[in-house]
Image 1 (tube, one colour):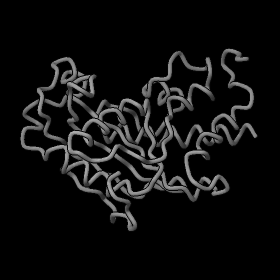
Image 2 (tube, rainbow, N blue to C red):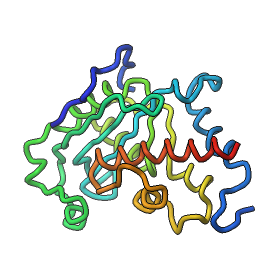
Image 3 (spheres, rainbow, N blue to C red):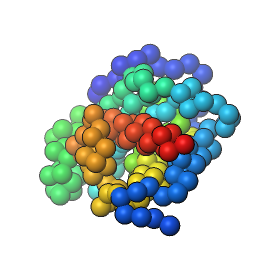
Image 4 (cartoon, helix red, strand yellow):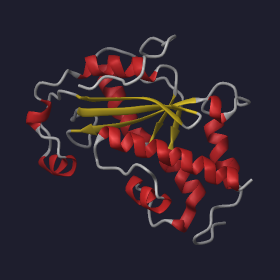
Length: 219
């Protein structure tokens, strides 16, 4: 697996009315408010907050019956990339053929990968106390929590931001849907999702920054 490209952070806690084409009224407060509430001190400027975008690939759609196959994460502060993390994960269940066709990850790619407990320990250390960001984050959290529970560890206790929910509030009917690929095209993000963990995490981080910039421009 690829390890973080930056030094691991110190002080890591233990593993524990809409109109088409226009944003909704009060979009700025609708976006910035939830983001500010995601960390302890609402007076902290956003450029001083560390965010960590995360994305998972899995063998299927059920956290109870399926497993993680790849983890990608990217840490940011003030819009600057601090480091990335990527690792395959050895699953206990085979990868669904439809999922393999979508992601390009095959059983033979993950057969010798480290198991979930080892990868999650490294991921926890990499994320540290950052605000966790994801697109449809509840999917990723469900798999992370299931894997942590299987290892008799506490669920994810970090503060979180879901870019899919933020995009729905800000963009309204300006886009046909709030899929990550749709939003990346609409906003012309630098990174585009590929159904691979790190690529999608980087695209999610771009999306967060774009949404915050748009909200700030609305005043």
